[in-house]
Image 1: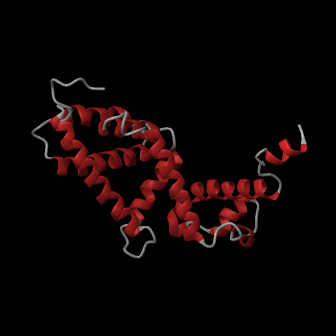
Image 2: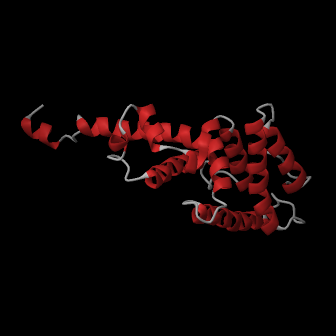
Image 3: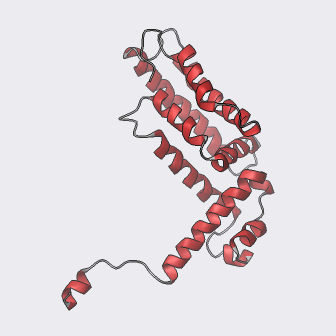
Length: 208
């Protein structure tokens, strides 16, 4: 390779940058384990740092405070859930919900985190209170519109109120997940399929 070719080739990150990124991700991974067990308020930066093998000061080199670290844990959790749901252009709302339920069964830590934090966030002083309130509100509004289109296309029962059904989908998913966290013999996928078949899907429509 000539000098010009070497200078034109993209440079790969290496050295301290790669090490720093790996350390940052290790902190996020351990934070997930801690927050999913003890919640935000119970989660200690000192414990997370110890699990990673750094000092609390070393942890704060990567994240300004516990709130920033917690936000990154939630962001990565959301990315994984969106990936599990699939492309909205390729899957109906019901199919996406089923895919998320199946995914959550394979990721107990993330499912536990969401269950604990959503309960904690009912406290108006919790750092995620506004975020979780907006999550449920926005998710319901989006689901309502999708359900209305599903009724037009014959994929959703026409005697179902889309606004109520939108809220019920989240309620059923969260409730089933909580029962599974308490008793892993609970079949989340089977129960959610039952809800869809009995409540959302027209009797004449194929259940996918």
